[in-house]
Image (tube, rainbow, N blue to C red; front, side, top):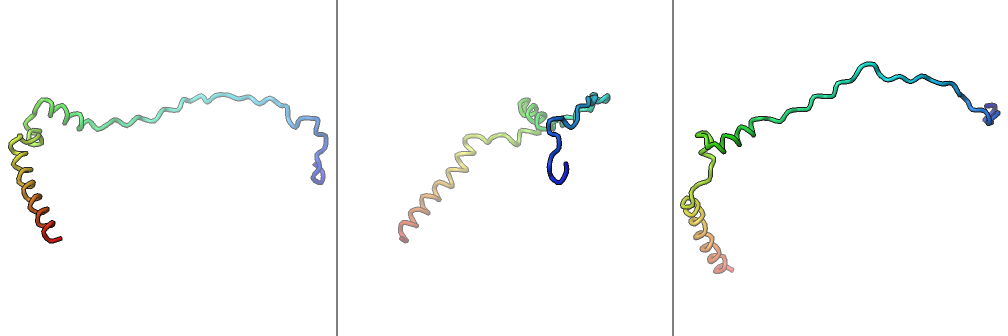
Length: 86
């Protein structure tokens, strides 16, 4: 290249063969992280109805009706009061 001009563009710049070899050493794959086994242990214990998991189970139908029944009566009276004040 002289003064920004190309000289003899018909000939390739380089035609040498370059040897390419693969790496001799294998790279190890990164270790796959294992999931936490405590979740699976909890599922197994719950399925077996182990004593330590019993407190986490659902309440009886009567307990649920008692708990939710008390709040329903308060909602009705609150709505009635709101309508009276408006």
